[in-house]
Length: 140
Ligand code: ATP
Ligand code: MG
Image 1 (spheres, protein in one colour):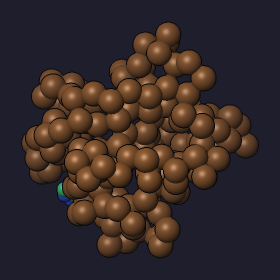
Image 2: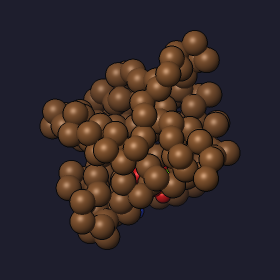
Image 3: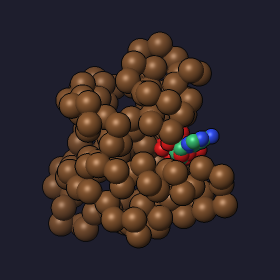
């Protein structure tokens, strides 16, 4: 297994409920290290660009509205097999299908308001990290 980086986002449903710390604890307990982190509020154009791959999906406009509805926490996570490990601790997209103990099983409100994002491949992780952070913001 290789040391990888992945992009993690704590979504507005979670910042609204003041549970960012509980989510971060799960990520850290899974062996992932936060090497960059910032709390931001996305403009519509930023959310549209980030979720461009989903542009044709019926939920795209709602997703953009949700992701701009409040603050989010952007993080770069590093660790062994970080992309897969992060998605494992996040759980399935729909919290009804998420394994017990995962972030989405414990905290997600719905398939849309599902508390966290994680990159789905090392290639997409590199793209998403470059979109959200400058090199000098990744501090280790
Ligand atoms: P993420 O990309 O946020 O890590 P994911 O990879 O598990 O989640 P995707 O298929 O990439 O899921 O969908 C991106 C996001 O769009 C989901 O996390 C969720 O917030 C929203 N979404 C996905 N499917 C639906 C749906 N059927 N209805 C409403 N929202 C959805
Ligand atoms: Mg995805």
